[in-house]
Amino acid sequence: MMDRLLMVMTGLSVALLALVLVSVRRAHIRVEYSVSWLVAAAVLLGLSRMHGLLAWMAALLGVESAPLALLMIVFSVFLMVFFRFSVILSHLKDHSVALAQRVAILEFHLRSLHEKEPDQ
Image 1 (cartoon, rainbow, N blue to C red):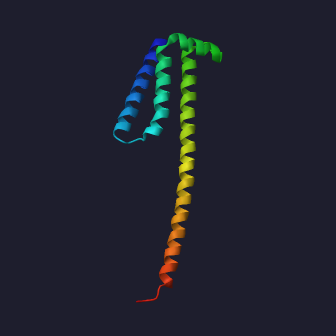
Image 2: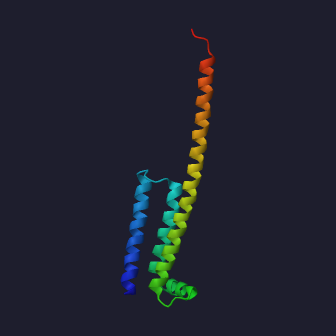
Image 3: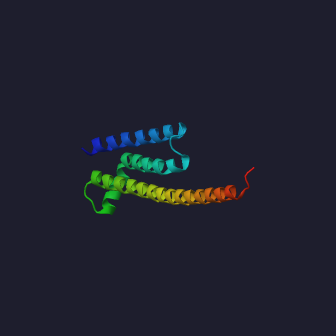
């Protein structure tokens, strides 16, 4: 069972690596955002191929089952990636609100200047 799970995880990590690289190539995702996904896929690939490292991580986590340790680690890595993107999205929202406010102020100033001009 463990070998089957590790093969599935290897396949998923390779598929994720390929998907991210193709998405970067086609400009569907920016390079700076792809790094997190590439690191997550590389961690998944490394753990799924290195049985000794996975057994050590399972012992470190206090889990008897190496596949369970792998799933815990994978969940933790992807949780960190999702948190990072939540922070990025929050910053983008704040910047877009500030930009909308600046545009509104500029439009107000343009309208007030246009109203002050004498009719020609």
